[in-house]
Length: 345
Image 1 (cartoon, rainbow, N blue to C red):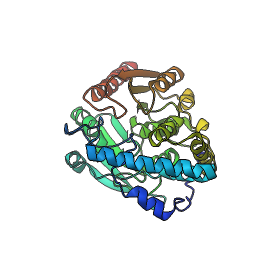
Image 2 (image 1 turned 30 degrees about the vertical axis):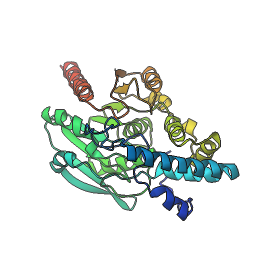
Image 3 (image 1 turned 60 degrees about the vertical axis):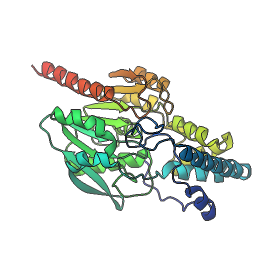
Image 4 (image 1 turned 90 degrees about the horizontal axis):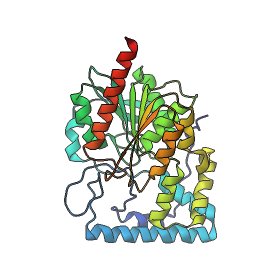
């Protein structure tokens, strides 16, 4: 059963501490970020927030502050430290939209869907070909699809997308994969049909897989294209703890909060297991050097997902940027469309 959208407690971080942490706006949690590489300074793949000396210094300062806050709190109370960690992991930061993505976004028919007291921002680029549903990841937005959009539009596909709750132009302040699935369900109800191909990056792929694996949801895609999805949610939590230097007491506290808020532990949110029951065929795209979601998880998902294909890249990172990935996606759609036509003859 999908957990209800529970009310969250007020910010558990002392106001003065939170103000201190937020004084530095350049802190990077290194996954699911939108934008493009500018070629200036040293940039992470797929981002426009570059690693200048000043940014590096600020990042080190804020990471050090978070480490002292989390580990110091954990000495007194693992659960209290877990509240802080859970707060940070479920409250995505919003970054300014990349102006270079504005053109393709402005070409879409845009609308909103009412969801849990707020609005979900929706996009549609009409086409006569197969329908495609784009689902972005954590701390990202629909603009992250700028590289994939061109090839899809050129092929004439009927393209749909949403900004997840608490992301992009959608409302809300809190996010988890279960709330994302509920928003998807509400959107599909109002849309009145189910797009053929669901393409999800990272958290968006997690939502697509979870949605299709649960009998509680009434809709089902014909294909899922999973991009940079972790084998299990614990991969993301481990990465967060690694970045900020949080110890095992903090991780225990975060897991406790997940169980209390969502009725699930880290171990329960396991995409290597969720894919076992999928009847939907799919494509898994994963980079060999993904430092957020290890490639081993993708290989295990491929083994457990009966009707799946695995395409690996090298050097595209967790963001899976560059021209290779759009080529892989469009070729998969083309090949499955051809196979479908042959079966119908």
